Image 1: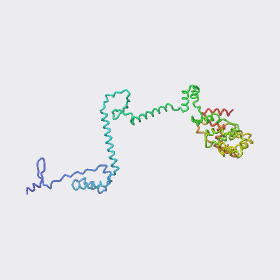
Image 2: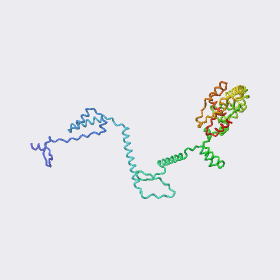
Image 3: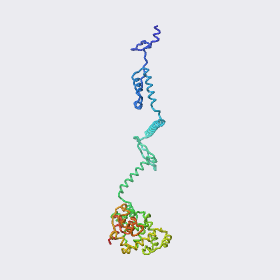
Image 4: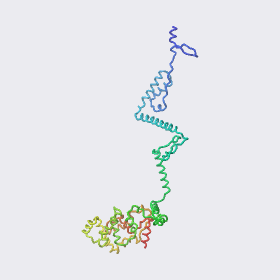
Amino acid sequence: MCNSNVKSAGVAQIDGRPVLQPAGNRVAAPEPARPLKKSLQKSLSMPASLDNAAAATTCTASPENTRAADFARAAAASLLPPPTPASVSAKTTRVSGAKVAAARTAAAAAAMGGLDRSRKPAKKAGAAVLPVVTFAGLEAYEPAGSIAAAQREHVAMAQAQRKMRIAHYGRTASFSRVEGKVSATATGAAELVAGAVTGHDEKRCSFITPYSDPLYVAYHDEEWGVPVRDDELLFEMLTLSGVQVGADWTSILKRRHVYREAFSGFNVDAVAKYTEKQMASLSAEFGLDLGTIRGAVNNACRISEVRRDFGSFSKYVWAFVNNKPLSPSYKYSRKIPVKTSKSESISKDMVRRGFRFVGPTVIHSFMQAVGLTNDHLVSCPRHRVCSSSSSA
C-alpha cells in the first residue's frame, strides 16, 4: 500500500526539502494566453458572443479555458479577408527596396570612409577636376557626366539667364537692333545714337516688323495716312481696299501695277465706259476676278454720278469728316478697330447710292489709306507728319 502510494505520489521541493505529494494534487501550470495586437483587435469585427468568450478565457487559466481562447482566436482569424497577391507583392517590394537602399548607403559610406580626408589628390596637368559633393557629412568626387552635375549646370545657366533678363529689363528689341547697328557701322553713328537715346519712343507702328516686306514698309512711310484729294487716287484706293478683303496689303501692293494697267490708271471716265466684253477680256488677260472688275466698273459709274451732285468725289468723301482728318491718337495697335461709327455711316450712304464692295470694314480701311483718319500710333513719326500735312 505504501509502495503504491509512493509510486503514485510525486516528489516536490518545499523550502529545499523533498516532500511527497499525491499525483492528484499536481496541477499543470496553464500556458498564458497571448493577447492580440491592438491593430488586429481594431480591425476585427467579431460577434459579441465571441468577444465575451475570449474575455472569459483570458480571465481564467484552466486548460479548458485555454482551448476556448485558441478557438476564439482561430474564429477571429477566419473572419479576416485573405491577403491579396498585390498586397503581398507590395509589402515584399517595400521590404526588399528598403534593404537594397540600406545596403547601398552602407556600401557608399564604407567606400568613402576608407578615403583619407587629410590628403587631397594631386592635380595632374591637363586632367579634368571632378566636382566634390557631400554625402552624409563625407566628401566624394562626382563624375562629370552624372545626372546631378547636369542638373546643377542647368540651374546655374537658368540663374545666369534670369540675371541677364533683370539687367536688360525694359529694353526693347528695336533698341537692341539700333545698338547693334551703332556698334557695327561707323557711318551715321551719331544719328542712330541720338535716335536711340532721345527718340527711343519714336518708332514705326507695331504692325511694321523687321520681317515686313520692304514694299509694305515704303507704303507705310510714304502713303498710308496721307490725306488724298485726287479723284483717281481715291478711286484706286477704294478699289484696292475692296480687293484686300481676305488678303493682305503686301500681296495687293505687289500686284498694284496690274490693277493700274487693267483699269486704265484708274481713270474714272474710262473705266465707267467698259463693256461686258471688255471686262471678260481683262479678266482673262490679267487674271483678275470678273466680279472685282464688274464692281470697279460699277463704282466708277457711281463716282460719275457723285461728281454731278458734289462737283468731285473728293468733296463728297471729305464732307463726312468736315474736311479735317480724324485723329484718334492710338497708343497700341490692338486698340485700332476694324470699323467705326463713322465708317458705318459712310458705308450706308454709299450703299444707298449704289456702290459695291463698300462695307464698314472696307470703308474704314479706305479711310486709313487716304488719310480720312490718322490711325498711326502716337509713337510713330508718321503720326505727326500726317497731322501736319492735313493742316497744311
